[in-house]
Image 1 (cartoon, one colour):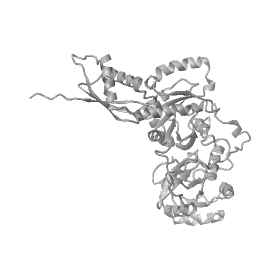
Image 2 (tube, helix red, strand yellow; image 1 turned 90 degrees about the vertical axis):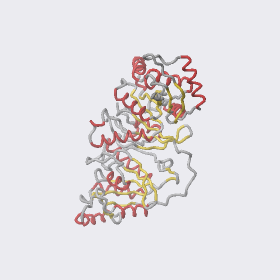
Image 3 (tube, helix red, strand yellow; image 1 turned 60 degrees about the vertical axis):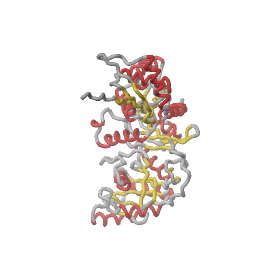
Image 4 (cartoon, helix red, strand yellow; image 1 turned 120 degrees about the vertical axis):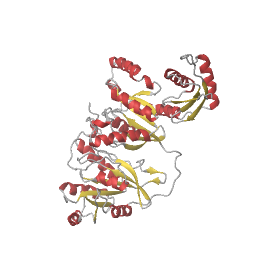
Length: 468
């Protein structure tokens, strides 16, 4: 089923209302200046972004159209920080998915303080480049012209022809080898406004939420609904999102940072090229988040992929909320089978809050905020050593550990070693059974809550002194 919003594409020319407030260029020094990197497909924009960042961050592959959304990164040069926005290839004549990718680039230009227009110097000026230049001029933003793929003196001479675009000096650069990148960045800083003075930052910053799930379950539709704009390219083709996309969203009177991640494939090793790197980005997004929202297609049976993603979130120690999407397509018969699937396949994460939503229409999406609050509260819960040991005393008195081979391990002492996620260390006289560990975890949840969070239990077995 396509997740398009029909009113966006009814006449073939999507219309957007641009709102520059709340764009994710906020930092501890106030809103950082924003540089949008635009250009035709496959002119080396993402390679140039990686060169500027000094690390492999943007997904790069020698295939046009790998970058599909506008993706922001924190960058700095000569002691000045700015936000770098990588965009999909901009083809003014595009249709369908390519048209929506081009629209994302146009939004990025509207939100930016300056634009870096990347051209392949080895090809020269194309009709598409001239069309893009017209749009850039209408924006009124300062433009830095980057003549990319200038790897030698011969290519540098060819780049001189780019003066004919009327954008001023073409700054020759080789994104692949780094040639000329310093001079290009100096020109960028000259085009960007100065960073505002320091402001009082919110302690800890916005809560970080990773939206995860297998491909085509509606993750991007959910983020667009939360952001109340077409922030991410949405298409019925599975795997449209490749790079994680950060978005600051105001919900329930607070600001949250959402990350829409590429759909996790069945096995990373089976993914080729940009899909392999996209899978790594998803794992990084989970590690960077505080809460993972697993989006599941409620219309379809729970799959092995869904369970594997749950395991990834659990192993990362992040809080978890499960969102069953496309609920408007779930009839009574499907609800019956889904209940059985939850009891069978989600038994290891019964503690995770569950919400039923329809991202396409926004039905019950507001229920995410209370679920996120519960998960964060459970994730950060800490109990005192006195409370824990009083609890252990009651637990052992009610149900002592079974005797194994004539021996009965005892819990001598317990302490909470950390929170986010909650971690407990139990000092014992012998190794506790896994079943008894699960019993302790279940009772901890009954007593203290720990909603929405995994619990880590570690044992420290007291070594007996050997007699001489």
